[in-house]
Image (cartoon, rainbow, N blue to C red; front, side, top):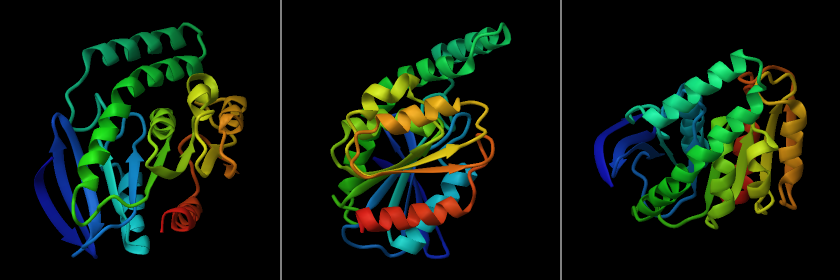
Length: 243
């Protein structure tokens, strides 16, 4: 892991890094020392590691809970080079939707493909970050919706260090099998009028989770319209399960 820049503001230290070809960002409390909980965050499709929603939540996790937070650019996003194969598939999928095919199965298939690359990458990032003295091998949480859910479900299913997860805006078409392997507490976000993920597929993914403790948070609105108050709920959720 190689750190490339460091800035601090309002009690939060932000450090950009690269791990091999993976660009990422780590947020910690200013002057942090010793082990603390860590939240891994997965950004949405077409976004990046410092997208506004990621940045706002990360800073709140740090200032309100004294956590560390890490996020990386997934393949073809942010500071990573464009992936010709992924671009080709996305272009083909767009043409298929315009020809009348349903969007949700195409999204699910694409996310399953990308997850085969991102899961081991995120595990490598987790290994590296937990070796830092001011983060350490404390409890780990995961937060990710939309693409962050499609990639996060297989990550949480595969990674025993994750103690709790916030997921949502995803469906069961690609993730049900992995969801059945998740037993940690989950808070699941669904938008009732989601135009990208059919409601029945979202509810089916929630149902597929094997967690004994899981909570469905369904709110009116379209795919990207998660209410601001859900951040406060997420803070309480992670504070209970990671602190």
